[in-house]
Image (cartoon, rainbow, N blue to C red; front, side):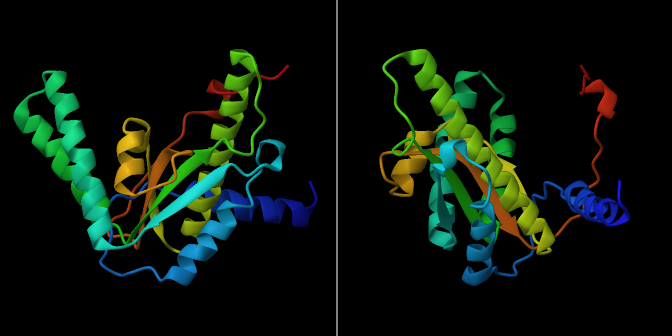
Amino acid sequence: MAESQHSRLATFEQLAAGRRSIRRYTDRPIGPALLEDLLHCATWAPSAHNRQPWRFCVVASDHAKHALSRHMADKWRQDLAADQADPAFIERRVAVSHARITGAAALIVACMCMDEMDHYPDSQRQHAEWTMATQSVALACQNLLLAAHSADLAACWMCAPLFVPELVRTVLELPPTWEPQALITLGYPAEEKQSARAPLESRVVWR
């Protein structure tokens, strides 16, 4: 490997390995220009057929953050109660989630839209197309997470919208074809985290 190539790869590895899922933030706001820059970075991700099926909802107002958190919490309480979880446990989990969502400077709700994807008459190919669109959105989310880290912001990917897509769409007044996939909290970090990865050889095979 050439020295310049090695240097560039080392720089990227440092960025990727330094990213952490941070759940506590300071009260410092994030300006709309910086949020737009992050979203521009997200949209440079590869996508199936280059259809760019991602859609993003920026939740920056305290009112919207609290409304989303409150409605999601109500549904989560119901689900945990149906699972016969201990009431004190339920309230602890809900309180932690509420603090995480409302304590962020901004939320990015990543959605998937099938409007411009291919459509097939059979379920097998149609499901593959849906999966391709979902993977495209996930790639855009990773771009966003790395961009945030490079800008000295903290972020955390949350999968909660997958459990309550209709609720999220209703609370945020999203178009009916937007399918909520993820919620990314953003802010300036108020904590530090350490992380580790499994040995590469335990996750890779060569053929």
